Length: 460
Image (cartoon, rainbow, N blue to C red; front, side):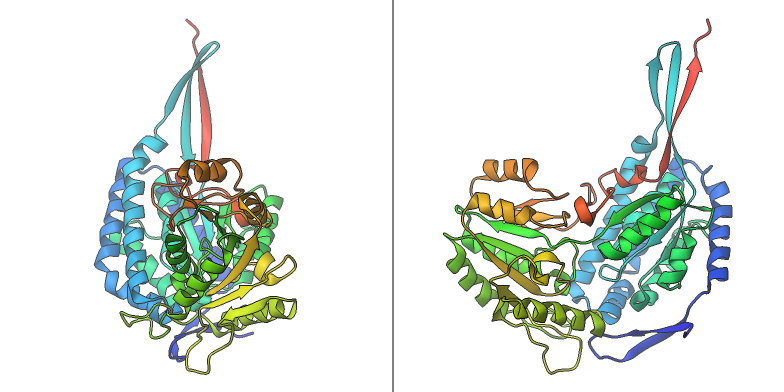
């Protein structure tokens, strides 16, 4: 087995750089260094950690151009969306800094016989295993909160974005964090899995497929180590009887093709009531066909290439399998004969249970169009999924849509009459096979802490 890996530009199909993989022994030594750092870092005041979080925000903004270029060249992100990702990461650092002191402050409570102090203390080294689709954001969102909480971290990034992995470690060092508080380990998946067994690893946060995520959780569970999992989804967006169709169409296009369709919490299944089905289908199809596919650096590009050739091929296999099972092509659904790992904006209809387009996550710009009898049936179909990360509802009756979202939609997040990705001040995470645990909104900072009760007896 080769101990090196090459990153490939998905637009030019040319090699960017070759990286030497760290072996298990080297990775374990890195964990030990992180553990040594933790012994001192946990004693650093929250105020000092907050200063460094704000410093990291400044460093991220200063390195904007290089970070965006890495996203474009390593995984084909459209340039404007890369710029938005950089801004989001800087804002996450600032938000974490703004809430940390209050979130981690000791609390006092009385109990029979005395007074108690509730303290939030860091656990130790946290292992992060992160994907390529938001190569800066996925890492910053978990690492900055854990570092501010007093933990240290080692991170295994996806091999096709190793350039970003190295850059992120440089950002932390430039910001003034102590050496080994954050480390990007250039390792493969098998090595990362073995690190879970290391005594110094106190928790694992994983973003990726539900299949691999469940294996990670099982390995951690054997060793009584906490995990936070974000495992993707096939988010349903409901177009109810009273929906504003033009708004629904415009928003659905954006929700499906953001990040070249490679977003866990993007719109994937479009469940439209019989009343609106034909009109929505006509408008949605026209809008999808008008999207421009091309160079991710170009200002007028809507969809860039998929991140890797194997991912593009897997997507097409899922589409083909769905068609073979009875789904019909509305538009797209064929691999273009051109340079780059492109897949067109595509729509399938007559999508039924048992098809990948219904049951699984299509991680690319392919929409599944599903007809519902009425609003109630649309909600039933939306929840007929093993996943539960996000979703959306289009309805002019906002009160009704809100009640559906809160009481009936089995997901961690719901958009009403719009499409929004993660927000620094709102909790992010899912239910069912989309995982558990929360990040952002002040929730992530307490996922890997020891909530400790200190009871002081009143002996007077």
